[in-house]
Length: 429
Image 1 (cartoon, one colour):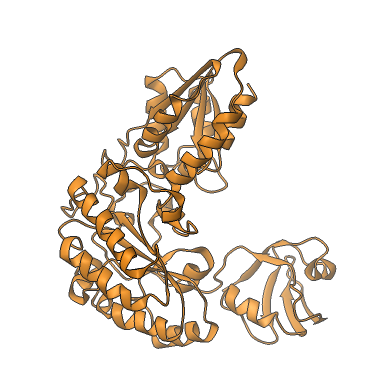
Image 2: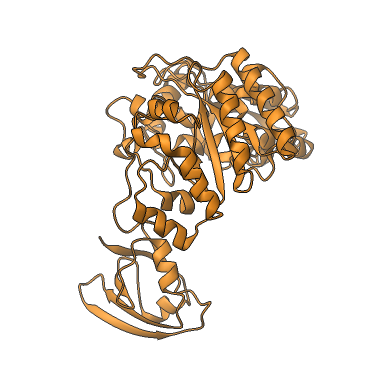
């Protein structure tokens, strides 16, 4: 286990000590932190003994006196310094398990670590929690954490997660409730498994945990062509049932706690709810409320669009099927003289036509779409790319596409929940 410094804040305590990126923290007050949680606790003392192994191999101990609230100004390569707790489930709906070979290695990593849930918002099932994990969680009281529930039926949850430990879910929730650890919960809705009466049962059981249940996201199962199990996708009948059941649940709870993901409303061909439905948009990364934010932002931005371009230009947005429906509606209201705004619904041949979210569009399918269409200026949403890089899920890079299509300019937009970046692109033409 190595605790490597990735960055040092300018003019911070660490900067004054001469620490740099690549230096290693060996111990703090004689203790070796296991993660950022331990580290944050250890550096709260007013007097700190910091044992450092420098990048050049030299070791040094610093005696630090500071105010209680002062931070050292250190960032790390990872939030977890010891081994990340792996996922021990074999969920029938797991998307990691329905990917082909040959993608980048990070896509096959399955973690189920409550620390990452608290620090980074990843979902955990709690099935791999040992007593020592519970004791530490209750000691530090991290809140909120993100919990994948799926169903509160013990036998059904064990079946869906392929793990006998999954049956403990109600006991796990009771333990979280006793410690007053708040949660954001998730249900992946799989027709013929946890829908219908089972879904109603889960909602009914969750009423007991109103005290700690900050939000509940319900998302439809994603089924790629590589899925071995014969899973059904959500149809309009199921989508209608889920949306109506959630509305009734929220009425009984007297608060908008549960939310159906955007995909349910698209499948049901219903209007996207107003922003009150989504509260603080705490489940936005799960596709819950993204369309509402986008639509509201477009309404603001459309008033700021310039009337005319200096010379004719063509802009092409390449996006997944779900988002393409929304942007096609926007296109009708983009009346800029000299601008041809095109929306290409990039069909997912890589994972299969049942996958329509933008974040799972690959470089392979982008390449195919450009070949089939005359694209001058291609707008690429950053959710298609590995964070901080120009690399798609399948390893193809935008720079690779640039070599194949030298007459096409590629523009990456970072915030997919807003239209503002596209507005600025248009107004700069």
